[in-house]
Amino acid sequence: MPKLPVVPARKLIRVLKKAGFVHDRTEGSHYIFFREHDQRTVSVPVHKGRDLGKGLLMSILRDADISPDEFLKY
Image (cartoon, rainbow, N blue to C red; front, side, top):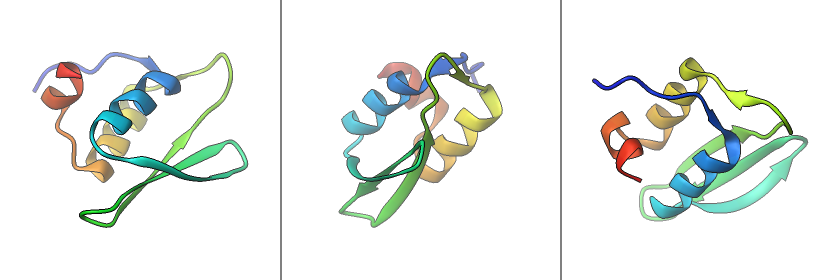
């Protein structure tokens, strides 16, 4: 498994959109994304000036059913 980089939330959001997720709603500083065909919901915290850590990124990718290899391809 490749090492995951520390990325800003906006970059992760672009990857989620390419994977078929759409912005469903915003709750506070968390953007909620939804993918219709498998009914998956993913929450991404968006804080200006702060990046997502490797552990949080891995957790979100696991929830979205996206492998680290797929993430790096996008």
